[in-house]
Image (tube, rainbow, N blue to C red; front, side, top):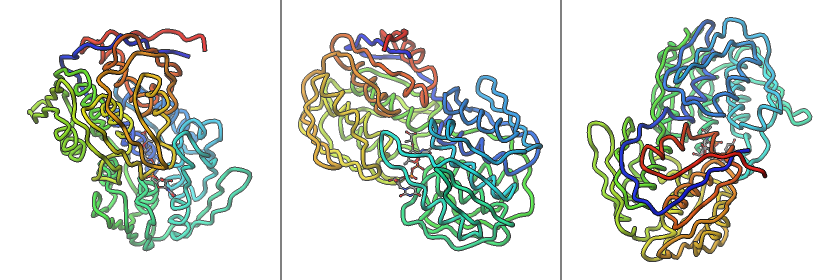
Length: 419
Ligand code: EPZ
């Protein structure tokens, strides 16, 4: 295992270029199953999760090849329909193969993802939607066995605007007979990116990005050649890094319009954020002001930025109240931030953060992807040395993070970890 050693307290300055969005690349890679032939997807970040998804596609008989930034997937010979536990347990997004496999082959055997650090992560809404489209679903020793003699369009209401649930159903509906209407659909930019990718394959989709999406099924789709949107969570992470270090960072290749709620809150907290042709120039204040947030489905404040925002609030002037409404256990970073001197109380899904003047470097443990990002933010702002253990959590979602941080003047080293 690796660890990251950070000597904090420096104002970071310079430019950073944002990589492609993990949560857009993953569903778009899977959508290649819907067509037979070779698909090429650009701006795919070099992440553990991308390689895991590649292994999963290989398992299904699709040839997966990755060269820096580009995934090439050949789906001419899908000859397996099983997503095994050992792959699914490391990456929940594997459940995204359910819809496409059903649509392409009429059957799928996908391990239930099981919970993860941040919550139980059920997929009941995915399964409900697929059943409404005519699939037979049964649970068998930790696996979902699904089969369908041809999916048919249906009206589906989602109790929660589930992101991957919406994506699974979008992909299944693209090849179903008839029209599917998804109500209370997720509106995330990554859902819109998938819809755009599917449309480039010949799918007929309207309303992506709104609450109601309509899909008119077609008989066949063609392989895709597509470039993925930039990662709004990586963008937000570098914004909070500029904020906590009091530095100035030009964040290039980002899409500010995907981060409006975050930009509003960070400006209110005292960061200067200028939209430029190359991206966003973010200048941190000497000390941020405390601001309350409540995580909500897009376009609300993103749950994937809650931990990083909390690290910034840990050194803010005043007290901030942070409400996490999407996941039931997304405060795993709090105990680690406390080790660095943060003053945070948790009551259910609400964290009260009393800002302290400075955090102190410490040994801390990454517990999940975005929690590890918040420890990097805290470590860069803290006085002294912070060592983040179990770095594999971070490698799932951040491409070459230490290289990008060094480019901004950070003193950071990746090292082998005994633990
Ligand atoms: C996606 O997860 C993202 N992952 C998550 O990013 C992100 O945090 C989340 O959306 C919310 O924005 C990918 O896109 C690969 P949900 P997903 O289904 O789709 C409940 C990261 O850090 N729910 O929108 O799994 C669920 O329990 C990851 O990159 C059901 O009850 O999230 C949760 O409370 C973490 N039944 C809420 O909905 C279902 O069938 C939102 O979950 C599905 C979900």
